[in-house]
Length: 316
Ligand SMILES: Nc1nc2c(ncn2[C@@H]2O[C@H](COP(=O)(O)OP(=O)(O)OP(=O)(O)O)[C@@H](O)[C@H]2O)c(=O)[nH]1
Ligand SMILES: [Mg+2]
Image (cartoon, rainbow, N blue to C red; front, side, top):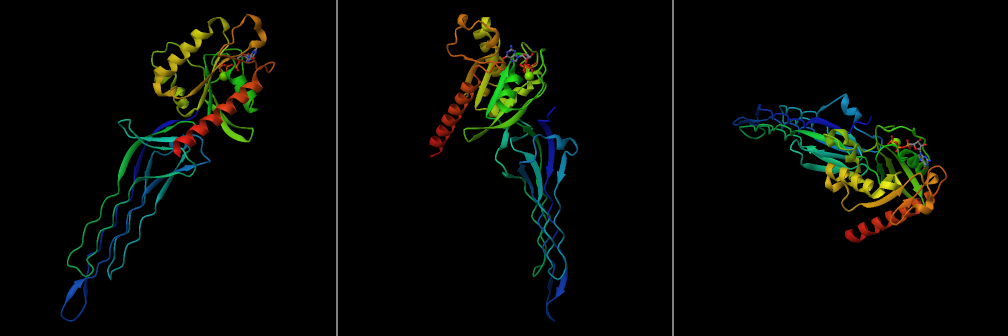
């Protein structure tokens, strides 16, 4: 199982206190000689390409950066606290406890300063007084890991989603003739026609569930998908099945399907009478005899190219 949701506490370092000490400056005047305190260390979240879920946060949920050192006499400044880097996988969203998105960390090596270190206190060097240090910021947030995938495969149980995933990616995840074989999302990189992208397989969508956020919680990983392959193996109730599937996905979050390219796949056509089927708007495939697989790959590449072109036009 991947860990995709954790509550974590971050605290930046407190500033070091400014020193208060007297220093004889001349025979007539005695003035301060206390140095400034050091700044507290910041907490920075940084995307690591080596992580692929939030499991490391199971061991540790509290991250506190180093405090700044106190200032010393003879105007010696305290050392700054060290910045604490906390590594997260690409695809981590930082959300506050009210559910508001703070930042979506979806680029390799992207950094986000989550807690500012406290300023050090001012020492009384050349002054009669010193100024207090400030505390470092603290925050409790939820980290959501949302798998960065370009193409997601989704559907009800046992219709060949994992078989299709294996066919497209060259992987060999378990395929079996019973429902709910796949328990968690898996993803793999693919390179086709010099284009690299990621395909994700998902567990089956459960129908008529009482608590969709609990029972179909994996659906949140469709958030980043650019293309969704809706798979069915029931030619007789094809349209109804796609509609039911889209209803389930949208009732999890209506944004999951918005603006996405959707391909409607009918799998297992090797055991169907092709002449009796109406393939309008449908992509017929078979992971057993390979029907439609090459065409599907071409369609995916074409759609991805179109999506990147659109994004470039919007950015220019
Ligand atoms: N005839 C035929 N059988 C297929 C085809 N693709 C998959 N199957 C069979 O369908 C059954 C289910 O395949 P899976 O790939 O595990 O299906 P799934 O949709 O991932 O199943 P869940 O993870 O349980 O939802 C297995 O017995 C496969 O061998 C196909 O193209 N033709
Ligand atoms: Mg499966």
